[in-house]
Image 1 (cartoon, rainbow, N blue to C red):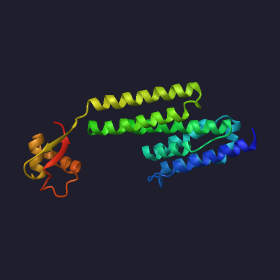
Image 2 (image 1 turned 60 degrees about the vertical axis):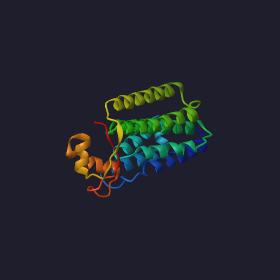
Image 3 (image 1 turned 45 degrees about the vertical axis):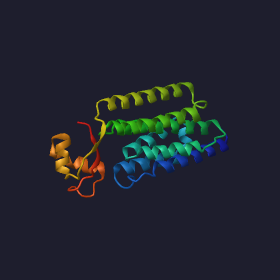
Image 4 (image 1 turned 135 degrees about the vertical axis):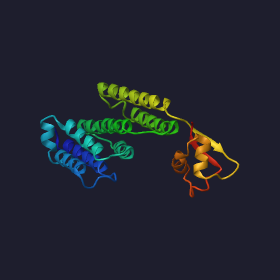
Length: 223
């Protein structure tokens, strides 16, 4: 392998790692330390990882540790957008870019499956967001993926949308309510749900300034 190919691959890897440590929760703690260790091992042992044919697992370990350290959907989006800007000239660079696309999407699916949703609207927003991610990867990388990797990506994407769709079906809808006067939160909660204990939910959902004077037009979860 030419030194120029290795150099390109190291540069691309460095830009991946820079994105993996940009999310706010990276600071102190064991998870953050494990992430930095995985990144340090990958970058400092890059040549030996290539020779031992374990570069892929070492790169995946960096992504997995980022997930454990609290990476968000946005931070994985940032990795992917950074990779969209890459234009590798050599096979190793292409392989690393494609791996970053795959691994970032895998971590996003893990983040999503750990999420808890309150309404169908929240799930709808996420379905639309991830559908764009899936289409972007198909549009920009389909011709560069190894066939087996592309099939795995398509299968995982389908499972993700199925999971979100199934989650959506069991959740309540967001409903708009209009009242003739400004009720206190407790009274409004009792009117909507026959349960005054859900007043805090109404306050949070509507960004209410003072709970004694709820807005006349509010949104709430369907009963």
